Structure formats: structure tokens, C-alpha cells
Length: 114
Length: 116
Image (tube, rainbow over all chains, first blue to last red; front, side, top):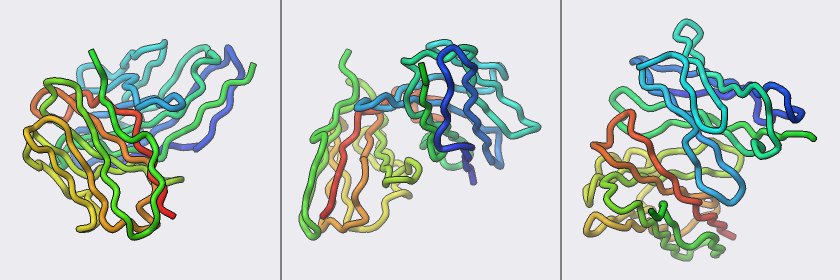
């Protein structure tokens, strides 16, 4: 069965600093991985997804993630944080016999300090 | 193009009452998903419709929950009778395609349900 673990329920960075949100997955089959972001009072929005085409995936708003099979990781990064990046971020996996449904991590709330 | 909409945005009911949540997917999206997030926990899958058919309802917690999608357009999720542990945020998502593993799911803003 698939599962996702996000390390750190809260991450705080200064504006302009590197953002690193950690995601590790467990999957018995090649996984498809997603990062979603939720801004206050809004629905989840797709940031990027890994579908096996390339291990380094670029998404919206300057975010990117690298799929590392040997480490079973799909960490999300952004070189320079902006105040508008403050939100909750979710890593998710789909795959295997479970079909198109997404299995989410616990979420990481990102705070950006001025 | 309108996104996924959900109604109501908030609902407060007493234990034992009935509540019906509604989701309108993006027009033309055959796949509709329901998820739930209980406070402090991860978002969990409830069920998946393809058009009007239930493709996967393995996440439905018990028979107090009934989901329908008549005509393959909007969907309703009824909780009857509601229990305290049903409190949480209920998300709806929709996607084009065949409901495959790489389809992008578009999420609504959620309905926050509080059972007192």
C-alpha cells in the first residue's frame, strides 16, 4: 500500500531564504507524486506532479521537487521565500491498484517571516 | 471557467441530525472525488465517481454516509445521523480523463462540518 510522510507539521523561514519541505513516500509500485498548496479559505491547488517523465519537476510560483527513488523522497524546494508563499502544503501519492485516488501526507504549514 | 464549488461552506449541526453537502465539479469532468480532513489529521479519500457510477468507495467510514451523483453532474454527500467524529472539512475534487493515476485533481474550497 502507498503512504506519505511529511516531516515537520510547521516550518518557518525568513523572506528570501530557501524553502525546503520534506516528503517521503512508501510504494510497492512506481509512484506518481504530487504537491498541493492550500491558501487560507481556498481549495487545494496543484503545485507540481511527478509522472516519471523527469526526476526534477518544476511547478508554479518558482517551486520545484526532485524525485529520488533511492531515498524514496520527493522534497519541495524554492530558492527564495516570499511572503505570499505562506500556506499549507500537502504531498500526495497515487498509484498501484488503488487507482486515481490520492493518499496525502499530514501537511506542512509554512510561515514566512519578514 | 468556474472551478469546483461546494455548498455550504460551513455547517454546524447537533449530533443525530442530518446534513447534506453538495459539490459541483468543473463542467465536463467525469471524475469526482470526496475527501475528508479531520482536525489534526491527514486528508483522507472517501470515494470516487466516474460519471454517475461509484468507482471506488473504499474510504467511506460507515453506512451513515451516502454519496450520490445523479446524472453524472453534481454530487451530494449525506451524513445521517451525524456523530461527533464526523466533524472536519470535506473536500470535493474533479478531474478529466479516465480517472487515471496521473490526472490532475482540482479541489473545491471544502465544507467545514461541525457536529456538536
